[in-house]
Amino acid sequence: QKEVEQDPGPLSVPEGAIVSLNCTYSNSAFQYFMWYRQYSRKGPELLMYTYSSGNKEDGRFTAQVDKSSKYISLFIRDSQPSDSATYLCAMTQRRAGTASKLTFGTGTRLQVTL
Amino acid sequence: NAGVTQTPKFRVLKTGQSMTLLCAQDMNHEYMYWYRQDPGMGLRLIHYSVGEGTTAKGEVPDGYNVSRLKKQNFLLGLESAAPSQTSVYFCASSYLAGGPFGRGTGELFFGEGSRLTVL
Image (cartoon, rainbow over all chains, first blue to last red; front, side, top):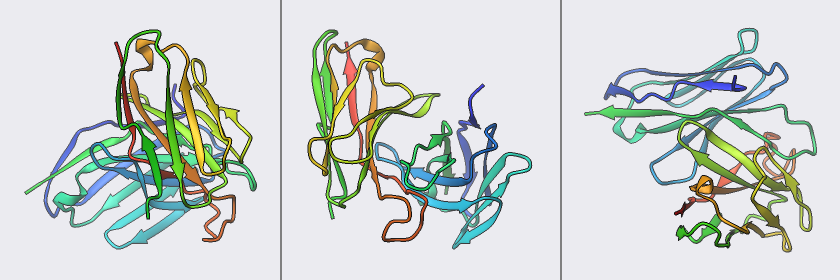
């Protein structure tokens, strides 16, 4: 069983829809949770990060972490065609002074149609 | 700002050939990483470095070697390429914990990837 599970999709939604992307994980030591966005043939770029449990909002994006359920989510409101990309969840135990050895999900491919 | 630059972007090798991928970053980051990305497997860490002159093994290090002779460069070598090493390779870099941005998350900055095919 993988440490981080993520539905690969593809997920196709119409423009303006609310999108929900999710990951589950098995390692209870994970403390930092991130979402990376990867456009086709490009490198991933950090979209949002959260520490421990709770919500974080940034514009149309909301990240949620439920450590008790070992479940994280990314919500995209008013989705746009420019949101079409692969979304990777990532997480780490991260102790001070150590390298960021992230564990990634496999990514969910999102297509927002006109 | 160039950020993280990888060369070459594409390469085709025959089984048994050797090659080196070069990663360069201009952000003065301490940490550098090499990942491979395969369908259904996600990003997997090959090797990483916590500073000039240091290297360490990641999740899938077999068949690869690395060197960090200069802080800004991180080289990934394949001594004898195998078809199983066909993949997209990503280099990344990050600040120390609690770096200038104060995030403490060790955000990774990725290059655009190098597509390697081994025949």
